[in-house]
Every structure is written in C-alpha cells, then in structure tokens.
Image (cartoon, rainbow, N blue to C red; front, side, top):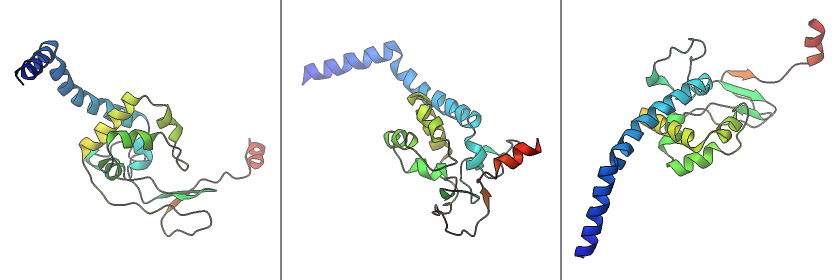
Length: 167
C-alpha cells in the first residue's frame, strides 16, 4: 500500500514538474478557441446558423449552430441543417469523431469533415460543447417526392446547355 502511494506521489510530482497538468488545463481553452476558428472559417455557420450569410457573418455567437428550418431539396430529398449544439451535447468525443467522418446527405460537405485532423475535429467538438445546448429541433429529413411545408432551397441543376448557350 505504501509503495503504491509513493509511486502515485512520484507520478504526480513528475507531472507537476513537467507542466503536464497545467498544459492539459490550458489545452482546453486552446481547443475551444481553435474550434471557434475552424467553425468560423469552414463555413459551418453558413447553413447551421440562421441568417449568417445574409448578415455577412455578424450573427452573435450565442445564436451560432442552432440549425435551420430552411431545407435543401434535391434528388436525395429534403435535408435540414442540424442543430449542432443539441447534437454535440448528446455525443461523447469518440461518438462525435465517428459521426463527423461518416457520409451524410447533400449538401453537407461531409468529405471536409472526413478529411479534418482528429485534433481539429476534437477542437470543433470542444467549441460547440462550450456553447451549450440551445435552440430546438429542426425538421426531419424528407425522402424524395415527399412534400414539405417549410421553405427550402432547390438544389437541382437546370439544363446546363441552356446556361452555356447564354454565355
């Protein structure tokens, strides 16, 4: 028993002397700030924050990432930007990493998340969690051919030859 306590004390002392604990505490704030940067420069707010593009990115951070009732309709059906603040509150970090790397319905650029480093995805997770849960649920995905009563952006390309002819 005494040997274990001495060993534990030696480990604590080594960690304190190496700055390991201080660094771990500082990494949390650094991760949140890195996550804020990644979110704000990766276009997450463009879809997941109501009014963000229209305001030139001036929506207060308290309103960021609460999802949108405006859908995106295309051959895949109608998708809605998730309320990431609620989604992330329900996931642990490992679940977030798995979720962020799986294929998602358009127009979500899931491949951008897939290609992010674990460090950046963990930072995004830390930032979103730091915002806390806010907002409500967004409408559910509607399969192709199902009418929706919400506003939506039509993501169906028109005849490209007509556009090319107009040039």
